[in-house]
Length: 324
Ligand SMILES: [Zn+2]
Image (cartoon, rainbow, N blue to C red):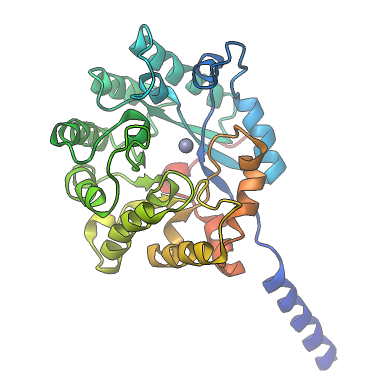
C-alpha cells in the first residue's frame, strides 16, 4: 500500500508542476470606450465603443474574475490630436459613462478616473472624481498620450500637484510613464529618475502601479533602462518603492525572440514576482483579449509557481469587492 500511495503522490506532484497555472484573479489594466470615445480614437463615427458587457464576456472567456477599468477620459485631451470642442465636458462625460458601466458589475469591475494632468481642469476633475462613489478608487495618468515631458520642469511641477492631491485624497495612481512617442520625447533612465525623485515622492501614502513594466507595450532598450532605475531602487530597499506595483500589459509580443523573453523574465524577478500584476489592455483586437494576453504572458520563461504568483497577486485597490 505504501508503494502505491507513494506512486500516486509522485504522479500528483508531477502533474501539479507541469499543469498550466490558473487564470489570473485580476486583470489590472483594462479600458472601456464610450461610443463617442470609440469614434474619436478610431475615426469611425458609428463606432460602438467597448461596454462593460463586452468586457465581462471577454473576462469570462479567460476565467478572470475582476478587472481594473482605467477610464479613457484622458484621450479627450490627447496632445497629438487636434483639440476637441468642449474638452472638459467630454472628459467629465467619459469618466461618468465609465462609472455607470462598472456600476452594472459591482462584484467584477472597478474604475479609475482619468484626465490629462497638464490641463487647467486637472485638479477640478480629480476633486470631482474623489467625491464620486465609482471614481474615487483611483486615478490613471497617461504621460505619453498627455505629452507629460519629464525633462520639462513646468510639466513636472504641474503633475506633482496632481500627485499631491491624489495622495491627500488617498487615491492610488496607475501611470503610463513612457513619454510621448508621437512627440519624440526622450525616455529612459534619466526621465525615470525624475519620476522617482519628483513625482513618486509626492504620493508616499498611496499605491502606484507602473503600467506596461515602465514601457508602452513591447519591451525595448529605453523601457529596459527605465525599468532598471526601479529595479536598482528595489535592490537597495529604497523606501519610495514600498508601495509600487508593476503591470505587464501587452509587454510580450508575438514576434519576441527567446533572448527578449529571457530579459523580461529576469527583470520581473528583480522587481519581485509578488508585485507584478497581469493586465491585458483594451480589448481592441482579439490578439489582446484577456485570454490571448494571458497566453502571451505565459511565453515568458517563468516557472509555473512564478506564474501562479502573478495570477494570484491582488493590489490593495482591487480588494474588498461587493459580494454578488
Ligand atoms: Zn492601457
